[in-house]
Image 1 (tube, helix red, strand yellow):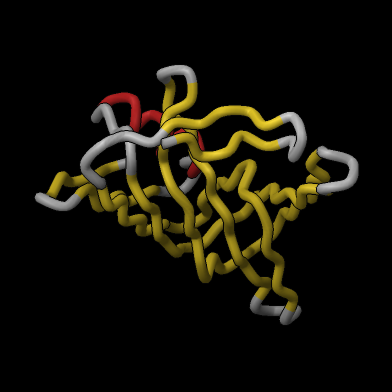
Image 2 (spheres, rainbow, N blue to C red; image 1 turned 90 degrees about the vertical axis):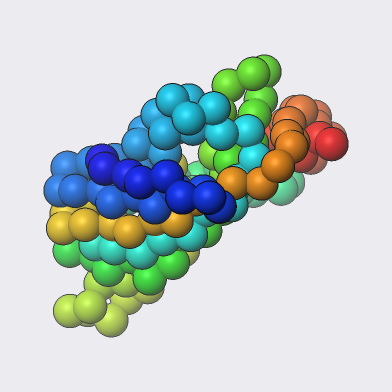
Length: 140
């Protein structure tokens, strides 16, 4: 991972073998990012996405391995118990097969490159677990 800081946030480049969630968590920790929005795109070879079942209150994951084009990586960075908390979603497709997938991003290993913009906001928003819903919700 390489990145450059700008007045409004960070521009991040991930290289082959870099993992998106680990890289952005490390960036948030190192640069003390407490509140940010994330957008990106790129190419990946190993992606795990999840879908949350509201009735069962649990995530179901799907792992995809192959050549994929990441058309949208979106989400945010907040804090939970003082640590970086990433909430990311991804849309990606298999250009050869015409298949597209989307969901909550658990893991994404880059195959060629990823270009990610992290827009930092002033202030802080936390997370608190809501047992009724089964998710860590924003807390202001």
